[in-house]
Length: 488
Image 1 (cartoon, one colour):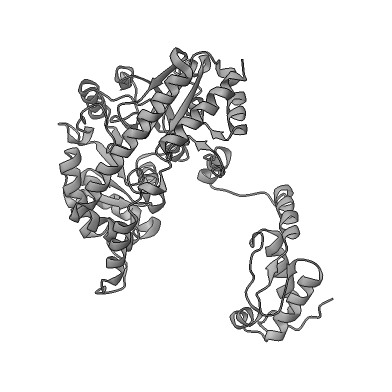
Image 2 (cartoon, rainbow, N blue to C red):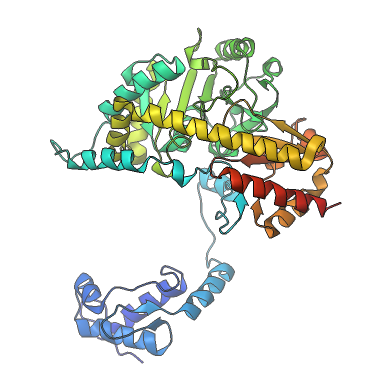
């Protein structure tokens, strides 16, 4: 066994051994994970190198790590497998004490699963094709931002860099008819942070919020974790059924009027005015998520709620996740003037501000016109992908399939009339076995709403296509048809 060699205030070999052993078994280091060199760890911990060497020798003797001359120690593969089993089975030694917020989040956490790899075709919504990303243009913009000598190294305006907000102001006006002052724009880390800020500032436990049904579940989670209560309102081919708002009191309503998620309806002007009138009457806010407005194919863009008269209660939410990449985490809010300082304070508390290099790079693309050119290019490519998907589905399923949401966006919803909803899980498994990823729309319905009944009748799939090429789409639909045929 290792003898203690501790001096006051310093760790001995045994303590280092035990700490590293626990980290390895807790999966801090993954398979083949590299540990620090003995020299580096000794310098960091303020101990003799020989002390670390003794600890490493004991870890190697017990099979936790593998060592060889001239290389850093590496975690043994078998140990990682044991640690994973131990981590799954381990129970806390004491009861967790959480806030009300934490307890609600524990009871109803948002779902996230590792995207499957090696599929022939993955119809997962929200992913983009790497071939669409403007690598050279973005690299040039980032390089220029990095090369620009800063006047100072300090925190910046929590609402976002002035240059980017100025560029966004012009872009929103020319692309979406949104007129706003610079002070109304708040740059956020993706639309999800925008939703989180809205939830924290506008909702208390027991308040009610209106959600489209079916609708975007990450928005639902952001609002519900505050303790607020969802009021699901069914949607149809024209989006939220605004006539159902009569008599409903709520603090806010979340809507996707330009392309309802997931069914794809476009809210007509009449319903838009009806929604705004309800918001004024009840003193509620409307959060307008314009998440993929750049992609319109067979209809002319309808001005957003924010551009209509009487939109003082509208908070407009946009993102570049569907045009550039979801990995960039850049979104923006256009908030009522009276809320600007409040949103700025909330953003400052959360993370000070969004990273400045990426803000500067995006601003440069907007100023030069490169962003607009990129959007036009990927719009054409995604229109081709959508046509490939529609054609493949119709060839494989004929009149046994109904498709919604083709006017815009990066996904459609396909209803398979010959397949009852009770076979949904079986179809998903059969498709996955053939290398095809599919995703059910039923998960996006609120169980208390009458709209849920529709999803029980037949299988509906949310089918994203923006990460696939036409050949993959064709093959994926062929395999999906084979999987469906095996259920008969």
